Image 1 (cartoon, rainbow, N blue to C red):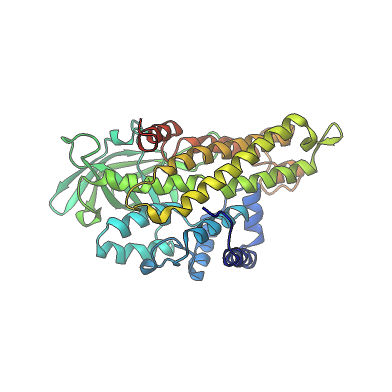
Image 2 (image 1 turned 30 degrees about the vertical axis):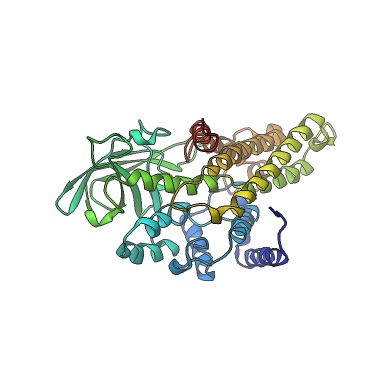
Amino acid sequence: MDLEFTAEEHAFRDEVRQFLRDNVPPDMRRKLIEGWNLSKDDMIGWWRTLNKRGWGVSDWPEEYGGTGWTSVQQYIFKEELQMYPVLAPLAFGVSMVGPVIYTFGNESQKKYYLPRIANVDDWWCQGFSEPSAGSDLASLKMKAERKGDIYIMNGQKTWTTLAQYADMIFCLCRTDPTAKKQVGISFILVDMKSKGITVCPIQTIDGDYEVNEVFFDNVEVPVENLVGEENKGWDYAKFLLGNERTGIARVGVSKERIRRIREVASKLESGGRSVLKDLSFSQKLAACEIELKALELTQLRVVGNERKHDKRRPNPASSVLKIKGSELQQATTELLMEVIGPFVAPFDGHPDSRDEASDWTAQIAPSYFNSRKISIYGGSNEIQRNIISKTVLGL
């Protein structure tokens, strides 16, 4: 296949870049380059700017607010967001539950939820993992027992990213405890303000509070919040995870981090010379760049073949992208740590301090620690290798 972009695609890239230059607040961009967290209001404001432009749910079908862009345009758009850098639309709503709703939900659910997802009127979080069900997700134990027109939900979800901000959570629940584990699961939408829900933060190794435990104690949920058919939730979860894994490749993120490595290296010298002139370091950086180019070409091949794939079924190629993408994101954070050297040591400086170490190096170590999770979430890389061996290699 031809992997060269057309003149129209180059013009589209220029359009996206100009929009970002005109609309991303400089302070937001600086914070993202340096690894600082944004406030909830900052994030929602930016996502609504995207939605106002018509780009908030760019890869949805046009009938639900999508742009009608080609798969290559979608690829270019996401890469430009990652490389600028600026936040992509909230994945839990736009890339995860939204496609599940417009693919498997009823008309009432589509009419109500999809516009709210596009404008971030509802902040969504993901209720999949449990203390004893992570990569082996089908072992989940959280129950949803039907009583007339409601489900009574009891159990626990963990590692729930940004649940502290969420208005809604989409949950996998066991609705038939007698069925084998992949069969008796349903996909249910839950209001986070429901009585009986408790959110408890988990402090991660980088010192942040990004993830949470969510407890359900006799939470009542209308049966109308069931997506699709009861006990078919495992099929919808596989569909959702296929979308998530493709996004985890994040080629643009690794490109931006390599740019950042070169920028930082130019500011610091070791023994009177740039670390980029160190043979060992330059070999590692070159190896990352070669692997990244290979990943980019692989993702373009996947993008080019998307029309041939049934979008209701997970694309096994997404597992390849997930493995290599996560490994490269981790490798580039390691190289950035190596560039910084002693500046990477933890410190207790005030976040508003403007000295060099607390300004543009302060978040490099936390970013390194946070990136350890990338090879786990969305299904661990070990699980992805099992998927590849069965669905791609036929072993």
